[in-house]
Structure formats: C-alpha cells, structure tokens
Length: 115
Image 1: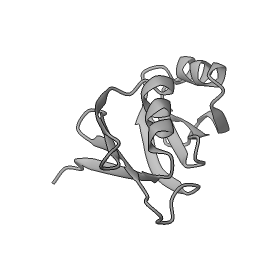
Image 2: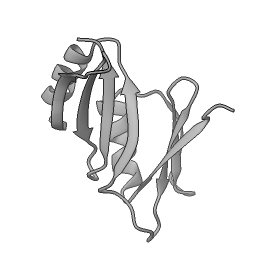
Image 3: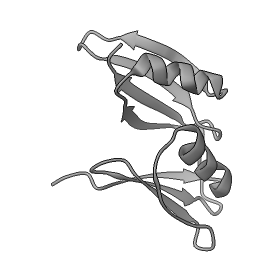
C-alpha cells in the first residue's frame, strides 16, 4: 500500500487554494468550487483541500510535512510572504531539519529538509 491522498478540511476553499498554490507553490491539479474541493500534486500523494461545509475544521495539527530541497531558502521565501512560523528550521536528533508553519486557517504544517 502507498499513501495516495491527504485531505485538509477548510472553511475558505478559495482562499486556501490561493495560499497552497501561490504562496507555497504547489502545482494545482483541479479546483472545483461548486463541489467544494481542490487538489494539488505533490509527488506520490495528492493533497486535497475540501470544504468543511459546517463540519469542525481548521486550527488543528494536520501532521503533514512537505519535503523541500533547501529548507533555509524556503523558510526565507515563506517568511517574506508573511507565512507564520511556529518553529523556524531546527536540526533534529534524527538528522533532518524541521520547521513548522501555519496556513491561513491555523492548521499547523511542517517542512523537512537539509540546511
């Protein structure tokens, strides 16, 4: 088995599509506002944003981490775009570098890379 899809439930689909596509730079596969979902290709796993439509959504730790080739440069680019980091890039005991940031709805996301 392989992980094929990861979903994040959101309150503002259009705003979140803008953040994930324009700010994070993820390649958008589709954006179907009428049916409340959008998808981004991230390699072997498709990231899906889905309109919560009244369900509890946002402001939770989603346990998603994006792998980046240069975490320092990506951190600087996202900071310049006013992305809120809760932990700047930090070397971890397991050998990688990890940073945490928030999307516009308060979901905490991670990015992993080398300094």
